[in-house]
Length: 353
Image 1 (cartoon, rainbow, N blue to C red):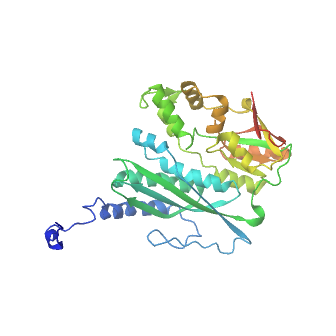
Image 2: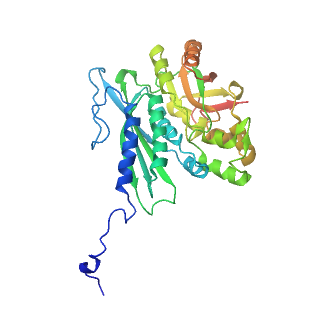
């Protein structure tokens, strides 16, 4: 027997009855607004609250080219849930997108986030967004808005998902595409802060196999949890300064695919790189992961950044100048090796002991 509409008239339903709390969403927006205001740039024509962000490029550029990127933080979120650490995961979110568009010479202009959960915890979400705003300030880009989606039944209790979207701008003539790279150029590396936001499905499997208590385990001189949750380094401001000072021929953000798969993305097909493992110091967390996971060296270089978060290619005669400038901006930088000729079918990245 089908119930008539009159049968439900005494118990009208609300959105909150369905698991969505509009008031909580409004409270989160109120918490976000002052964070976003600190990230504003002159190009932003309106604040958070409209249906879309208005961005004006003005007359600063002759032939502006917009560069867009999007990413998430993957299963690093699972560790954030387990450890109840939500303050820096937003930095990871920003870093993954702004570092990607940076390698083509783009200055990040603005960022938007997407936060989705089953039930909105305003305090936890505000901690996440606080990290996003901190990442935007570090990158010099404006947090112009985003979306908070409360979707009952989609996520386990206390869990959420994140996605980020960055847009930058570069003069057409200043686009970095690797086309000027030649044999003999110098390959420089900027230190990472740890695994950044890549390889965490393998990391979590290694941690589970090891049986360690993440809340107590040690790695090197610190806590393993701190090493695994260290936020992704944002390289924007030092590299924008470098690009203004001298010609940068190519850059590779070392994300999923590690050193061996990301560097070739910026190289002409006839070229490769020869790197020396002795050129940089690998952080202890990677040694811990390799030891406890029995991971082969080639697999380490194919999955993790192994201590190098960004690779930069410059003419050999400008290498020392570039290193000095980057160090002056607080980066740990070293010459990893050189660009070499590479025949078809050969590995483009050779890492020597």
